[in-house]
Image 1 (cartoon, rainbow, N blue to C red):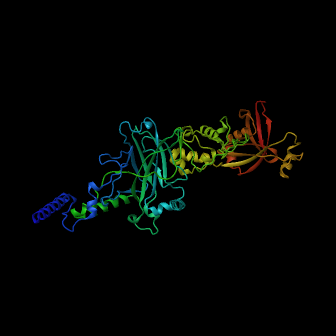
Image 2: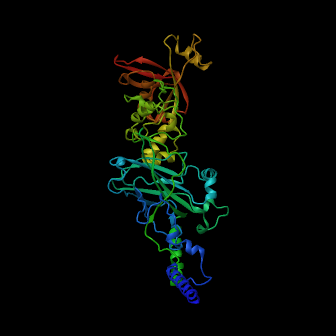
Image 3: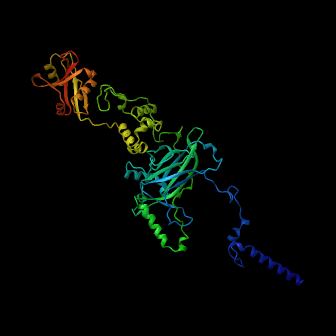
Amino acid sequence: MAWVLKMDEVIESGLVHDFDASLWGSGQELGAGAYSMSDVLALPIFKQEDPSLPLDGETKHPPFQYVMCAATSPAVKLHDETLTYLNQGQSYEIRMLDNRKMGDMPEISGKLVKSIIRVVFHDRRLQYTEHQQLEGWKWNRPGDRLLDLDIPMSVGIIDTRTNPSQLNAVEFLWDPAKRTSAFIQVHCISTEFTPRKHGGEKGVPFRIQVDTFKQNENGEYTDHLHSASCQIKVFKPKGADRKQKTDREKMEKRTAHEKEKYQPSYDTTILTECSPWPDTPTTYANNSPSPAPTFTSSQQSTCSVPDSNSSSPNHQGDGVSQASGEQIQPSATTQETQQWLLKNRFSSYTRLFSNFSGADLLKLTKEDLVQICGAADGIRLYNSLKSRSVRPRLTIYVCQEQPSSATLQVQQQAAGSGGENGSGTPYVYHAIYLEEMVASEVARKLALVFNIPLHQINQVYRQGPTGIHILVSDQMVQNFQDESCFLFSTVKAENNDGIHIILK
């Protein structure tokens, strides 16, 4: 019996030894009293795999990849998110790469997708107050945007849009099958959102986020495909280069053991997958941008038509169409807005503004138009929308003498005593705006305003002392006082071919 008990003890001791040996792979020798329950539960036999998660051999394959051509900081610890330094206002390339495998997402093959690039706050606290923060920045930097797209540098982007109400976002369409690069410029710096202004190192970090959408069944780009982002800090010009150099020098002074705790610096920054930005995307219909959500289009279909008698700089009628001088009204419909763009030589932008009403177009700022159309056309379109014409060098007021007036003396007296003719009817004067101080300009504007064929006007005279007729020369026009008033009459020329105009 004692022999049996001894054998049991030997067998039990052997089993304990075997169990100890089997647990050797957990990273430490498990002796008596040294067992760690967390280590034991971490063994594969105790794991409960989630069937919804991909297996170890299966990695999620994103459909797109976005790479920003800017180096990452070497002073970032392992397992932390990368940090990239950018210079304020400098153009940085973001490469839009098609990362699909063969057969993935066939519904977007041969079609355009829409991407929205944003600069947003990294700090969760600032994200909650983003609207107030951006409004404060806008107040301090009127007319500026936080994020711009460098259109001349960009490749493969179509129908770019910047919404005046979203200063931190840009949108565009692109073809995944073609090479596409979007060059962005960030105009806000990290220290602008700190309570106390420190150096750039103490500034708040931002995020660059790219959200990509495909068309739904209605042709609107609202179906989310992919989102990715990266962490950045923005410095004043050249500041990012100095900060990168400082970080690199600090890392060189660290020991080899300390360097192992930090990531190496990479030449480019790969945006990592993230959740889509919560804003509802604005829609592109039929590959054309729609008005911004805050815009309102009037239902009236009236468009202002200038008075044919007007001779202001916007309405010159020497055989040229009056349409180029028409001012667009907020009540103009999308069709009338298209016609206005065509008549004012903005035909290349009719597709871009295809869904804009007059109100939508008038709400765009000068900076918005320069960003959308370029400097030359943007300024020209802004001046056209705001009716900014060349100020006339001279303004005179002219009234045609009525045939029913008895004599010149009576007419002059009537004009000098309240502006009425002999019958009590007030004289109606027309404004003549002269851009050139020459006599021919006076004749041309008189012909335009009073519907006189220009070729029939032989000479223009001014009545002088004792009723003499003085030929109106360029020098006389240059000595006219601004806002002078004249009555004028017409007399037949001596050869009965044409007329003379006499200013009184």
